[in-house]
Length: 346
Ligand code: NAD
Ligand code: TDX
Image 1 (cartoon, protein in one colour):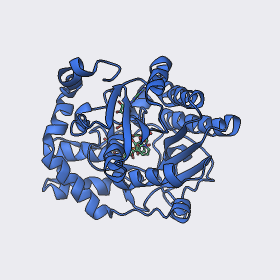
Image 2 (spheres, rainbow, N blue to C red):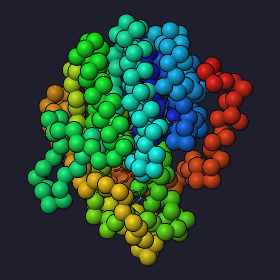
Image 3 (cartoon, helix red, strand yellow):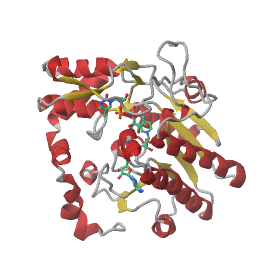
Image 4 (cartoon, rainbow, N blue to C red):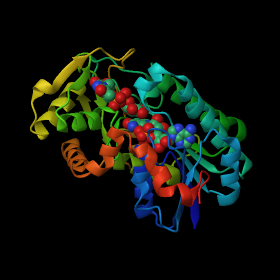
């Protein structure tokens, strides 16, 4: 049996990846390392918590001693690093924790990989490291050769981590890969991000804050398609390579918000235009030709279907997001697992 470390597995994409791995590769032992910041929600993992081939450890990836202890105990074969501060707006308010977790934390994990027999390491990065594309050049896309050119403290911290990962490959021969994906959507998406925020606010008849004129374009991918891409890369990807992941599904923010409003039978009067994000990237658009040609990856979920499925998920999982909106979820870990798990896992 192989052991995979999934960092940030109590967050949006990491938890979906754990569920994906559990069903696609039941032969793996999965160890989730998560600090449980405001964005981590242990209740997301409740159905897998008692599984004997799953272990949850509340660990900060910046804590070198705790990370090394866990490597000593579990001897992982693969590490997939989702752990990050991920919200652009928060990075504009206070960049420091982004530098700490996203860059330093990645370095700590890779050092542990090196000192434990050159463990295979995959870095989950983002298309935001390429900066943005103009709105009037629909012919332009991000390829893996597009220069790094970041706009926000968040994207800069992710780019810094990417460069460190490639440096560990070249300098130390650490077996690494990097994926750079476009915007994800789907279940367990934290409600500070556009799609879940708009769904939940609309359900509660609250204003829907659209930045600027809502004309910025994002390239949306259903989260399970991203998880399948990472699964392919960690098993078949070429070491030292970057793979872009995206489904050619560009949408303007305002069109997404209107779609959600109509799907929920609400009024467009809820839409409220607010001051734009500082340094707001105009357009992201991924060229996924490399991962398609090399690994045969293609997105499976069409946006028209995926967004309805996502809206339906939020309608039927109020028990997941209501404690987040009220803040109660922050106490859930201590209530449910405090005695059983402690702070370093079971
Ligand atoms: P998220 O904010 O939902 O989850 C992040 C998780 O990391 C949380 O569970 C949090 O508790 C954990 N975490 C944060 N700091 C930690 C630390 N110091 N130690 C251990 N755990 C820590 O993020 P997400 O949207 O699931 O994104 C996951 C990864 O994918 C990130 O690296 C992000 O940059 C990348 N990414 C996200 C998107 C997207 O659309 N959401 C797109 C491309 C890439
Ligand atoms: O209230 C809002 N109103 C609004 O107009 C919010 C939260 C967002 N927006 C706009 C800003 C963006 O143009 O919607 C777009 C999407 O915003 P976010 O959901 O914050 O995502 P984005 O900034 O595009 O970044 C996301 O995709 C790339 C993830 O948060 C990153 O972690 C990932 O790397």
